[in-house]
Amino acid sequence: MSNILVANNIGKSYWQGGKRLRVLDKVSMKVSKGGILFIVGPSGAGKSTLLHIIGGIDKPDEGEVIINGLNYQKLGDKRKSKLINSDIGFVFQFFYLLPEFTAAENIMLPALIRGESRERSRKKALNLLRDFGLEKRVYHKPFQLSGGEQQRVAIARALVNEPDIVFADEPTGNLDKETGAEIIHLIRKLSFENRQTFVIATHDYNLVSEGDSIVKLIDGRLEEKGNAGIYLKGD
Ligand SMILES: Nc1ncnc2c1ncn2[C@@H]1O[C@H](COP(=O)(O)OP(=O)(O)OP(=O)(O)O)[C@@H](O)[C@H]1O
Ligand SMILES: [Mg+2]
Image (cartoon, rainbow, N blue to C red; front, side, top):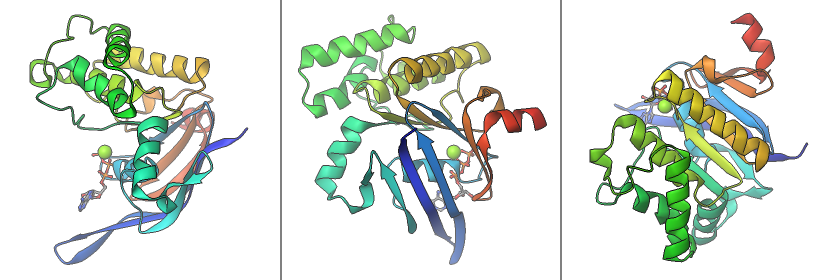
């Protein structure tokens, strides 16, 4: 199966109080098209940092990331932004919805940036709001939404341009068990029906099913990798 994402020897450090904090140490992974890869690990392990780097939002100190055969680090900023807008969806751990805009407008925005008409963008946003059970929240601004509703709007926004690959940082972190399971069900459906690929950072092992790929980060090091079935039996 072809790999949509390949990351080789990713390294990243931050400077904190004059000291170097090594957050990622030689992390490598491959994700096949249409698959779901979970990045699991405890708080502070480096999951968000890794997701930001492989999702093209942050730069690694070392290593390379190849998506759809393209090395994003080597592209010019303009070309990179365009590809990120159309090929990649990103769901942030803390949502980053625009506070002045309604739920529908937040979801429409990436489509408008891509050059879609207002009408078409709005229609897509309304369909997604319906899929996520938010048809009664179209005109709500983020501060008028619950945490779980904001999370679903953030996921819908990541899906509006039908990207090949979606990176989601703790996409069920603010949801009750039932709503979380519904979101994962929808993600599985999208990966199966549209061959969209999902990379999900989470500390919730319960989201992982046999057949998913999984990488386990401990203190920025890849502890294990392989097929979920192997880990689930041991856990
Ligand atoms: N911009 C930054 N500057 C300095 N240190 C940072 C920065 N971002 C992250 N770190 C540090 O890197 C480490 C990994 O952070 P990261 O957010 O990737 O962890 P995580 O696995 O996503 O944790 P959580 O499960 O709590 O979301 C943490 O110890 C954090 O303090
Ligand atoms: Mg995180």
